[in-house]
Amino acid sequence: MARRGDVDGFWRFWTGILDLVLRCVIDLRVEGVEHVPATGPALLAGNHVSSLDGIVLATVTARRAGRRARFLIAAEYFENPFLRWILTRSGQIPIRRGERDLGALAAAETALRAGVLAGIYPEGGVNEFPDRGMRPLRSGASRLVAATGVPVLPVGVWGTQRRWPWAGPTFLRPWRPVVALAYGAPVSPVDGGGDVVTLQTISERIASAIREQLDRARELAGADR
Image 1 (cartoon, rainbow, N blue to C red):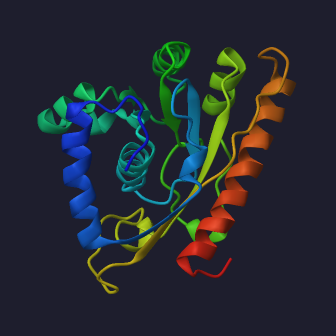
Image 2: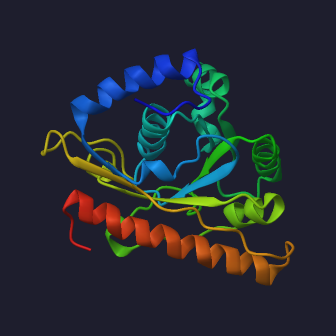
């Protein structure tokens, strides 16, 4: 049973469907979901190995922690009318990749100040070569933390790329690849303003925490580090 949180009927319905679908296509292993706060703002920040990452993370967070997560999602997904309706109805935030989308960051900052659990993939896109390690982090996550002072919940994700790598979905064996999520303990923000040094320090702290959880996710999935 999920803890009491802010999951409403819409989220229960759609994440219930997604949970059934995911059970059919992946073998899911989860650790550390108790780190997700039952109430209040926080920023989920994970590595990004597949277009499935957001679906899996949002579903697990809702079903097992009782929290809705508002992710910064690539704006092109909102071009499909059906997806746009679901994403908008669930409070997801479009962001234009490859640009410094200040409007999207402002929307995420407003959500965090309102007590929302937000989510971001600081690498800025799906990692084409996840076995080579994480890509350098972009500044969005550190700017949000510097502006709001919310804690960061690092999440390691591994295995979703077996079903949907950077190049697109694949249906090769194994039929139900192991997918692991490792939630870490909250990372406290760094004191200071939004200067370059502070943002770099925050970014390094976030990157280190995500890498630690990524290593744990790979262990859970039975992958070589």
